[in-house]
Length: 501
Image 1 (cartoon, rainbow, N blue to C red):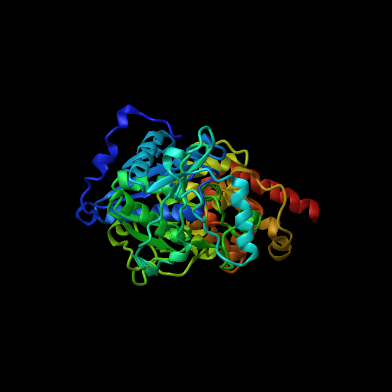
Image 2: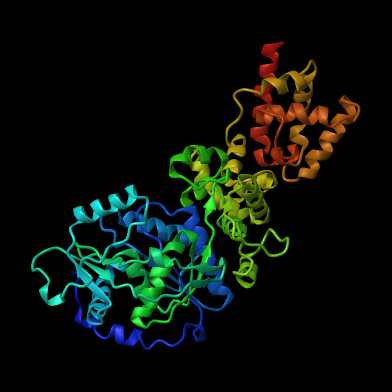
């Protein structure tokens, strides 16, 4: 069965001396399984635990539940750690690997067997599956029938594989209180002698999670409501160990925009909307971590009508009383709005730092220097994601090789070439370090050539410099491009117009 360790002897005795959980400081945990990427719903659970701990000056623990030997991977563990670091959800304790705690589980199994609260089960899997299928065909809930429950431990067949089952007591509570869902009934018909340890010696989830939460002195278990069905069995195991039962808070799950459960099979569809099942994709899509934390916190929790929260505000205002009972439905438009709000609040230097990697995806190698800071500043009020900002900034690095056809029809009418030529000829007299100087010169030119209508100057010019008529302030664009590049682009546009004419 489970590996033993003499150094861990006595842990059960120490754990049973724990006082009532309500008299302890708050201790919560986030316990993902490293069997794939970190799910966006899991991140929301991590955020709620983290904020609850901060609100109550408690402890936030990261536990990696990696006892599934076939599916757990080191890469998944690394991805979990990277994701939490990106979101600035630093644990106070951990990461703690369940795979390092097998001796602890063995001691607990030994204790249950000695107390007659558990027993070895030698029923063959094939026989159990046959009984399960029969129950399904008879449309009744399958429960282990207790074949091995009354077996004398001294008569256990040697060398035969076995599981260890929990001996479910006849008496149980009729409900448990949930801090989010309220009183939840316990259906005794669904309680059976469930498996604690598999025949290969690995602990089951319901067993190891109780042992870990008790030994780590977890006071509040905040998790998805898909675990509600597990809770009664876990409560009975706490009682069998004489451990204090923590408080439970089962939060509604995170659903997709159409209200259905998030599905990995629909990832391509989600990406087109600007969302993903994987938290790491949000980083690639150009979302700011603080914006994602803000959004996911508000996805099911409210504080009056406030939408935007600083991290400090979230840590002081978050509570479980205002977590709703309905699923949190991802809204791509609202997520982008919140992200855009955070982009506007982010310093130009920080945005430049972020732009470096995203521009690299376009083959542009650039440093987060003063020029890139100015580029970020020119685009921050018109970008919802860093990816969008990088895309919109490309014209600063590549002169247009073609021009928007609709804009050509509207703005490059007869006389446009003369306007561009006049602007180019006046460039040497302009102070490109001052946008006001450029603006004043163009306004003067508009008075001379277009009866003071600046748009008839600015739009043909913008089309020449960017390839479209949508960009930041043309004065800002010219200043960032500089005299030499602005001149080259105007010459290219003049050549285009000359060839067209």
